[in-house]
Figure 1 (cartoon, helix red, strand yellow):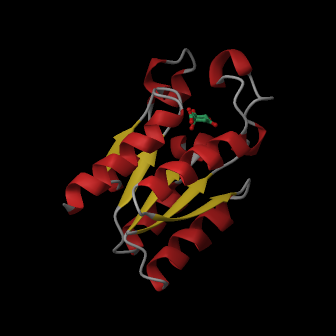
Figure 2 (cartoon, protein in one colour; figure 1 turned 30 degrees about the vertical axis):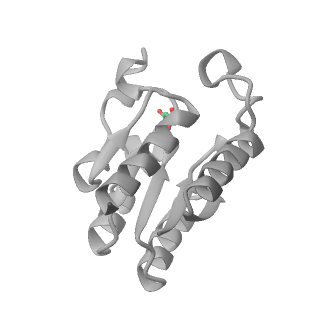
Length: 145
Ligand code: DQA
């Protein structure tokens, strides 16, 4: 199974960024955790991070053109307001799973309580740190078997 993973704004600063919320592990730690799981489970991962909304959309279209089996998307703050990403997900036929390290719905800022992309994603995994991604990958593995 070939899976494209897209990480949005400021996720490159994991480990530095609000460690009391996101923890001390770095973005490189996230990549190695995912790559290790992929190797153990014979998954092909292509992992990206961008701070730009348009690049998220380009990557979603890339997943479509290159026939990936699924996309894991942590759109970060863009999840809460990007109708352009909502439309981009609706425009492709690849299943997209929404992922968050934290559970935005349990956080104090009310703008995080809405995900505009949730209705067009097949599922959401949140609140489990790196395991949100692992659980999403497990879900895809189980769905395939
Ligand atoms: C996040 C949650 C979002 O609300 C926030 O803007 C992020 C990270 C998460 O992974 O928990 O940047 O997507």
